[in-house]
Image 1: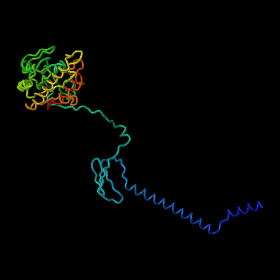
Image 2: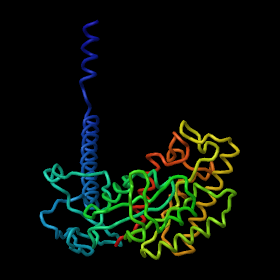
Image 3: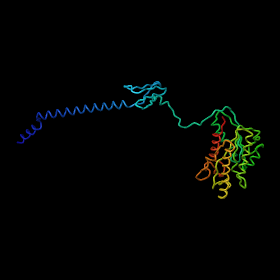
Image 4: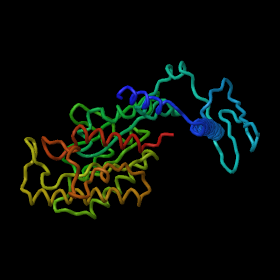
Length: 332
């Protein structure tokens, strides 16, 4: 009985009726046709995508003309690129570089300073002022460096007529006199006849009592005297002072806070005189004051002030003023 049951079950699972066979054939055929249809549809879609996609091309010559198989639209050839216009769409194609060209290409991401070639190969430049000019160096080393960078093919002879602790009236009085201070021994400015004459504001030595109008009028006279020497006269408004910490430091005056605020305010007012007077007199302004003034704290930027005395420019301050001078001078 068990054997019979086994044979009977085997015969039932392995025997197919004609209807079953036809049904399987139809299912197989339909599956095959569906697969072929999907393959055909995928091929058509890929071809359509390829026809709409434009890839960068390499060209051995700069004149490259592009055409589609249907030649729809217009193709223009230009010196360095091809432009295809179709369906109101403009596409620019730039030839790509070969791998060897890419390897040989180097890029300099550090901007080089702009240099200029002047018609003359030699200039004399003089600056008159108080200790803010005196501390620029015996031969104006900071300015010399900036000018050499900007005008590498031009020679400059620089004269520092700065003297410490002098106000604008003292500067005007010595303008026409022989100059001797520290290691410097110069003929008078009118005798020197420099090509460029920079008049500093003498703002850091206000009058006692303070008189802003007196400073304005005397600075005007000094500029007018300078114009008699050379047509290239510039006004220098030096860096802005500190307020609370003005004069603070091992070598500073170390006054009280009230005195610091009062004195530094006088300096700021006289620096503002220089800025306004340059416009009034039609003299080019070398403005180190405005960009060094912190509008939030209402005082000068600390990085530009020497921490040893809290008054004169630091190394960064001198570099900053030298940059302003070099970028403002018009020697063309």
